[in-house]
Image (tube, rainbow, N blue to C red; front, side, top):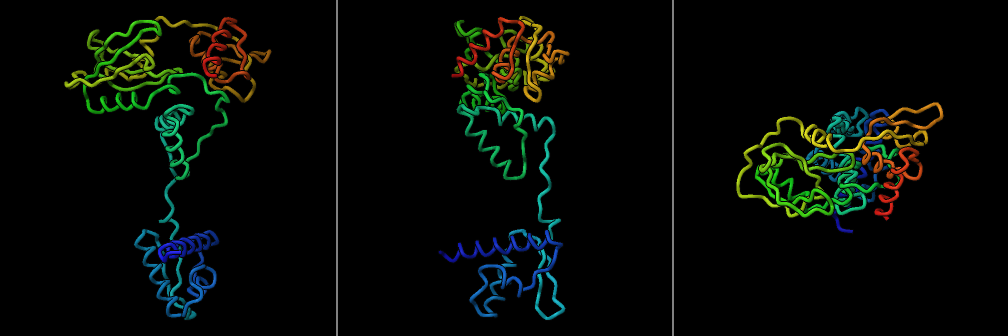
Length: 317
């Protein structure tokens, strides 16, 4: 093994020994203890050991490992202790908004092109001590805009937004409609009920508008700066207002097992017969969310929503 690898292993063992001593009351480690218990310091002369130990202590100090050194009273030389209050990183915390963004990133593309990026990001966060409760995640990932979002489209839109340019794109109002070229000063992306929307100032309509991203293609930046750089209100509010009209609202009755599908359960109230009743909810959201928790969740009313759920599950196969 090369000498550099030996040095790295020895330094790592020394740090672990200091950490363990700190957890056991912060005792000082004497040179004699280190030579006996830390691999890498045996089978050399006393002078060579002290030289190597002092060099390793200096290396750790240069690397930012805070150590306290104290001259032993019993003549055993200088002892060492880790200053853990300066060594350990503070707890990683997030605001509710930041946690929502990270949760969205974790959901984006679990089985799509964005899945690699999502898993990579969560792996790095997990290494820093962050955890996420996945106990309420549905076994089945519902069909939604995030699972089909292309990284290229996402990159193009975000690049244009950050640069502050005007953009054009083709938009189909329905899956069977002919695409129409639109011009927009973009503000950002908003997720709502498993759908993702591009929000901005529509130049042709001269008003804020939102467009479902699954119906957008051929995103291009124009060689002109956006003249409407600031939204009049929150992007979430713009999307909610634009979708308030023309969306079908329904009352529903579902079977939701205790401890599952909290999103659905929280939207209604549990009756004495154990079923959950929802009042005035978005029909499309209900179908997609219930499909995500199938077959545990059963929609009893309206009965025709079950057909929508079957179609969603069939598309996901």
